Amino acid sequence: MDVDNVESNLSRRDDSSTDPEAKASQEAVLDIPTSSRRPEMTWTRFSRKWLFTFDLDDPESLPPIDGAIAWVIVAASFFEHFFMFGLSYSFSVYQRFYVSETSPFFSSAAEAAASNSLVSWVGSVQACCLFLFSPLTGRFADVYGYRTALYVGLVIQALGLLTGSFATSIYHLLPTQGFLYGVGMCISYPPCVGAVTQWHKKLRGVAVGLAVSGAGIGGFAIGPLVQVLIDSVGWRNSLRVMAAIVGGGGALCGFMIVPRQRATPRKGFFDWRILNDSLFFRFFVAGALMNFGYNVPWAFASTVSPGQLFGRLETALTSLIDPRIGVLNGASALGRIMMGLASDAVGPLNALMATMAGATVCVFLIWTFAKSYGVFMLFSVLYGFCAGGFISLTPTAITSMYGVDGIATRMGMYYAGLPWGLLVSPPIAGVSSRADTEAKRKRTRQGAILDRNTQVFPDGTKSQNFVPSILFCAVFLAAGTLGITWVRFERARWKVLQKA
Image (tube, rainbow, N blue to C red; front, top):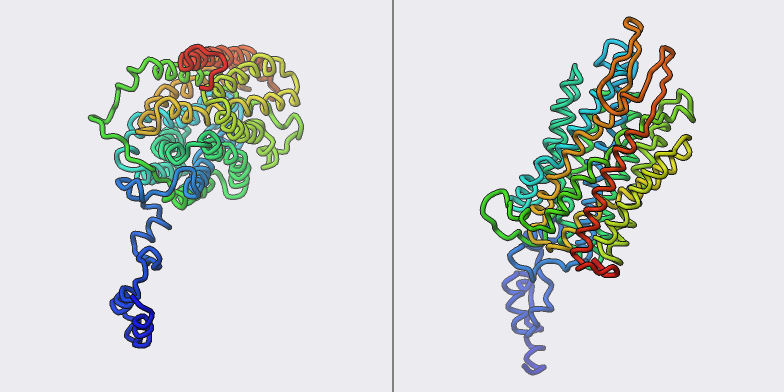
């Protein structure tokens, strides 16, 4: 095409060139390359850019792994963990209220003080349900989509909190704040972790660590908020407010939780062949043993009262510095990030083996001899840091061994071994005390380890021996650590310095 023809065409432009067809014809005459034309904002382009609706059947159209979209998904997963687990990790704030002198569920302060073990079942059921149905919910996420699973779980969580706000007996909280909220978390959790592992490769450990650190930071922040709500609007309205926060906050972030590839189709909803893999089965058993001890410090750290430092100051401040709510959760959040960074350097199995060995040593050598509040705070920091790695490194370790295909299903099968320890270890270790009532003036044993080593006196003071409960915790942590060590060396073909 010569210059004279181009100038002639340009001179004949008029207002009709604003018409799309005329504009396209004009561009064709001028021989403008298609790739240099500004693309029109179609609904497909808009939804991909702003609504994260990607065509998983067209890999070339997907954003790159480890790119900007991948880190946006990490941020979304962080806030999902923040809201969902932050409230769950703050349950001991509700527990302290449910067994306090103003408890709506017990007729006397003595009865309430002797009912800690009963109330702890609400938290145990909630934690147990987080993993109890995970083989189903993980597969559900792979088959029906991450967003669908996430939103179904959020609705059930909000429903559990709302119905729990109408409870008139502690037994009403078991199926509501306990069961329903736990099932909702069980459905929502696999997409939050599975999406992060699929969108990252080079810094997968750091990405997962950042995402799951939202749980620890949420526990640190939401605990004081729950205490303020209980003090200001009452426990019933606090549950309703938290239902709105968890459901609304989760829904805002949920549309960004998307997979990067479809799971390979499999027959049936359960894929039991996963457990036929001997390496995976040993990893499964090690995690199950670990969880019998893992949750004990989290459940019972609140029995070491902040009142030892602040007297009767039971406000959001004491909730903030309570090891159960503040220090353990804050240290856990830091540990999840740092252990994720370590896993990228030395391998997730190496990092997991080291962090759980550290947690076991903390229980044996520090908690056992913690005779002051300061030493217990030191234990809370170190144990929270090490234990946080168990949460962040597990998905990364599974991905490193088996890849990202069907990761939600495989994680669901692994998590099926965890609920039993969460369900029974707190009541077995025991948080209730032997009560001396004014009427009977006699001791009543609740049957748990700490119950049998605790005495409440008529003036309200009590004497507790934590050592048997500590040993219960330490033995199972040690057994799980040995199992993970076995998996690590078998995976690395018994090479000591191998990255695994």
